[in-house]
Image (cartoon, rainbow, N blue to C red; front, side):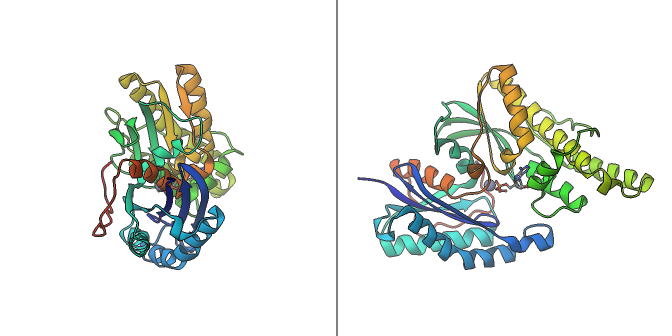
Length: 333
Ligand code: KG4
Ligand code: ZN
């Protein structure tokens, strides 16, 4: 018997659906919500309204592209958390209704666990145990991955996430939300000529709020001394900020690998799409003789294929959710 899963992801500002058939991604549809650009960040109430508008066509398209009818599905999976409550509710309610009407099981998925398991969508897949640096708009974590569903958090941010550091800096620079991809693009035309102090945080934890403040102070000072500085030196500023964030991330990842002795290392989450992080991780991996795993772009940022692959493993273990399941805005790994 084959396992056909319809997966739904609606934790933030992307409405996504995918069909995973026997562990193979048959379709992967993501509809990004443009409405937030006007506000320089995600507006939760607008996000849930947009999810309500997009969810039916996105699911329909996912089924169509996979060439499968709803009646052939074995289970419906959804992101239970962490994320925005209103956004999570839309995906969860839709999944519940569909599972109930088709009389098939529901599978709840942890968003951060799914980012990590995106590495099992295609070959080559990591071997257990491996270390994963999971970097997104809301999280920055170092995780020891012992098995598909056996993960231990060994380091995390004490304040802002790496993605937030990109997005908030972008806002100071007048870039549209989300600023991560834009900073990445502009940085390629500049040089990292400005240095920002690296925060001193004990152990394997991170902090990005100090960096944000030093960037703000630096920009204020430079702009006062040389009006037009922010515009004239935009590519260099972007390259410098990116260099700092990537440096902080890789420093802690290296500590974690040395500390645990694990030599297989992966990155996941939206910020893992960053070209400088990818490049420097490959270089560091060569130096440290790590086996490095970098997800495909489409599986780095939010998507439903990663929810589907996680649900595939849960299905095999009979890990189903009851109809009474509720979303969790905060949910520890
Ligand atoms: O995982 P994700 O798509 O959504 C969350 O779960 O938060 O991550 C979104 C974050 C945003 O902060 C965005 O600016 C950042 O990932 N991001 C990037 C790049 N692409 C997306 N940051 C730096 N460079 C990129 N190329
Ligand atoms: Zn994410």
